Image 1 (tube, one colour):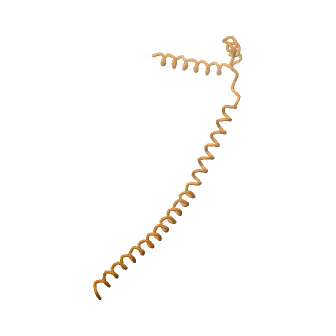
Image 2: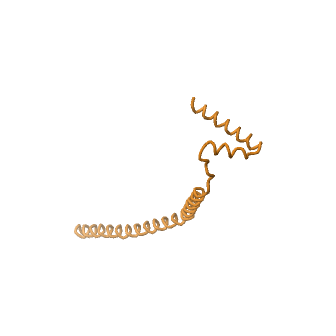
Image 3: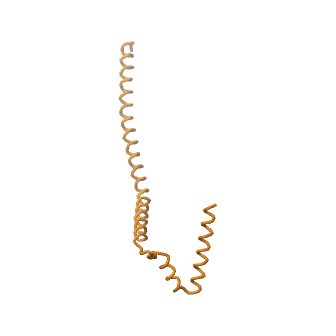
Length: 114
């Protein structure tokens, strides 16, 4: 085999190597893309229950908030005379409870003023 045949054979081997690398890299790229897609689908499926649970919790919280804000609140007396007249209907125990609460409020007010 002379030098010209060896050079030709070497060039053909280089071209064959490039062709093989191109084919193998295309296969590797396809496999990596497929693996990435599978991983993405798996993670999406795994996160779906968490997403659904968070959505349900959000809806429940909204409903509870709406119910709380829609709940009727006691009407406030218009003035101090209305308050005093409504106190006359309290029992002794209710008055005692009210007195304790008022004393706590006064003490909190004094603490806040300091």
